[in-house]
Amino acid sequence: MTKRHHCRIDGILATQANQAVIFRRGPNTHYQLSVWDLNADAIEKGQWLLVGKIYTRRSDVSPDGRYLVIAATDYRRGKRARDARQIPPGHDDYGWTAVSRPPYFAAIALWFTGCSWNGGGIWRGNRELRVNNSEHSWYEAIAPPPSIATSSLGHPWTEDEPIFSLRLGDRGWQVRRKEEWEPRTARSSPWITTRSGIMEKPFQRGCLRRETTQDWERWSVVDDSGVERRSWKPEEGHPQWVDVNKAGRIVFGENGCLWAWDAFPDGEPALIADLNDQAFECVSAPDWAKEW
Image 1: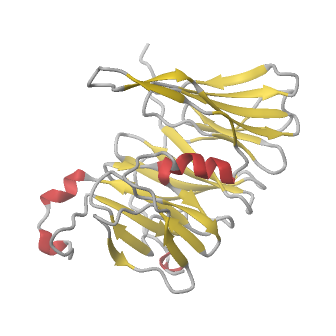
Image 2 (image 1 turned 90 degrees about the horizontal axis):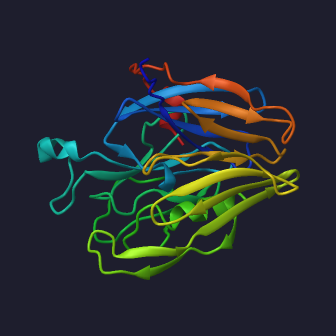
């Protein structure tokens, strides 16, 4: 029997609007953006982007769900002539940070980051964006309007952390135990985890838990009596998304599908949408998605 390959799903829950931005990846470098209306359980499927990688853990959605900031790279872009890119000498377009209107990727603000370090940002309000920039390789190609307060997070060279943990913290996740490390002599892996890190998001009937080490992470849903009801241990480099909205409804991605668990810990999760069979199509952004 042929094994079915599932698309990868990641998501970001808006903190004010009852909706989530959904990233669907597959095959390979094909990304589709959607918006999940959690009130009606309607999925608004939007634009596709064919890039090397979107760093979803460095991405964020504004509290009202209106704006999305992403980090992305595509090292194939270097094969094009520099004149076509309109980028000054000393800057590259391999990596970039962009703001768009979900479910569309059309950039209404754009910064070239030059590489896969840094990029993305955190929304501190509906009109306040903290970008994860690096002063040494940062070129502003499309500036946001003055009404959008934009400043730097001020981090040095970083990857997904600490920006991913900052985003989780904005959504009610709390550090229960810090991950601890110690050096070792292996050049390929100079650090080893001596104690796993744990973050939890409590809600009325239990909590969500994320445990991390250098090599793996594990997500789980635990009821208020301490019994683990469901868990996920994604492959390295693969996303796992699980969250709970203000109403205490658990939402998550699994096997290329979107699920919701309303009566937790009773009953079973309900299938909302199967995104596995989505195929690339050219989707143009409407005029409203090209404006602030």
